Image (cartoon, rainbow, N blue to C red; front, side, top):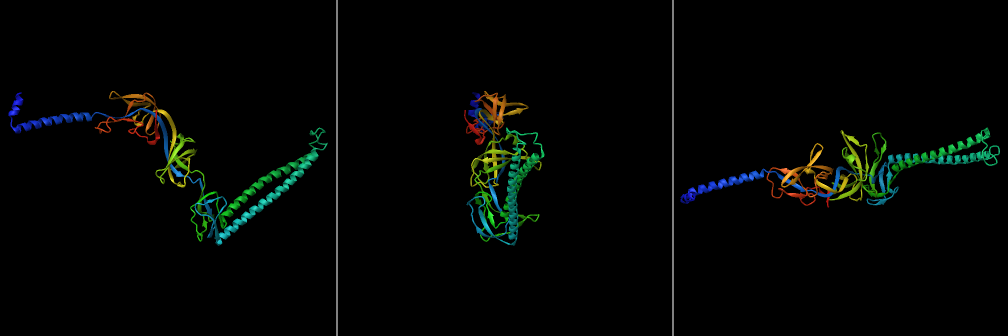
Length: 426
C-alpha cells in the first residue's frame, strides 16, 4: 500500500521510468521462456500404416533399332526412278529406286552378275550330279537286292544265309550299294552349300544392281533421294566397296529399350520384371514394358562394369524413334499389405534396427525387424504396430506452426513421399 501511495504522489517522469522498468523485466522474462521452449527438440513424425510396397531400381539407356532395318546400296550413278515414298508400306524384295549406273557402277554390277551366274551354274551342276547319283544308287540297290534274295544267300523262309554272305560276290554288291548311298547323301550337302553360295551371290548382286531393293517388309522412312540425285561410290579403308544408307524400313515389332545396369543392380533384376519408361524427347508420356533379356556377361569401360538389359514395351508408337534416350524404373519386388514406415525413421546400429516411437509426448527407441525397403519406405516385420507414431526427424530450432509436431500419414497428402510408387490401403 505504501508503494501504491508513493507511486500516486510521484511525478509523471518517475511513473514513466518505473513503468518502463516493469515492461522491460516482463519482456525479458517472456523472451527467456520462449528461448527455453525453442531449444526443446521438435519431432517430425509419421503414422505407421499398411499398404503396398513397390521396390524398384532405375537405369538409363536408348531405344534399340531392333525393329527397323536400313536400305543400303553399293551402286553409283544418277537416280532415274523412285518406286516408293516415305510412309509407304513395302514388302521384302520390293523395288525402292532405279539408278542409271555410272562407269564404276556398271563394272561392279557386271562383276556381281558374273559371280551370281557362276554360283547358279554351280548349283545346276550339283543338282545334275545329284540326279545321276540318285540313279546310280537305285541301280546298285536293285543289284544288291537281287543277289541278297538269291537262294545262295537267302533261305526259303526269307532269312539270311549268313555263312554265304561273306562271299566276294555278295560283299561287292553290298559295298557298291553302300558307296552309292554315301555319295548320294554327300551330294545333298554339296547342293545345300551351292544354294548358300547362290543366295550370297544374289545378295551381292542386289547391292550392286541398278535396282535398289527393300531388305525387309515394313514402312519406309528417311528416304531423301530425288529423281536426279547422284549416288557416288563408297569405299572402305581397304579399298573395297562399302554400302551407303538411303532409307530405313520400320517393322511392326514393338520397340525395345536397352538399359545398362550396374553390377549392384543387375543381380536384382529378373526376366519378366515390369518396368515404366520415360523419354527425354517425349515429356509427359510414359510407357510400360517387361524385361526380356539380361546380358550376364556385361561390358567393362574405364574400369566400370555394366550389364545391358532389354525391356520390351507393351505398346509401340510412331513417336518413338531408334536411339532416343530413355530412363527405366524396373520393379524388382512388390509386397501387399505390408506394415510401412518412412525409411528415414529407421536407425541402424550394427545388425540391430530401431525406430523412435512417440509415447506420452516422448520418443522411445524400439527394436524392430525390417523387411523389404525402397528409397522412401521400409517394411516392418515385427516390433511396432499399425497406428503407432514414429519419429522421422528431430530438430532443435523453432519449427513453423505448419510443420512443428506434425503427425503425418505415409499415405495421406501430408505423407512422407514416394510418389506413385506407393498405393495406400488397409
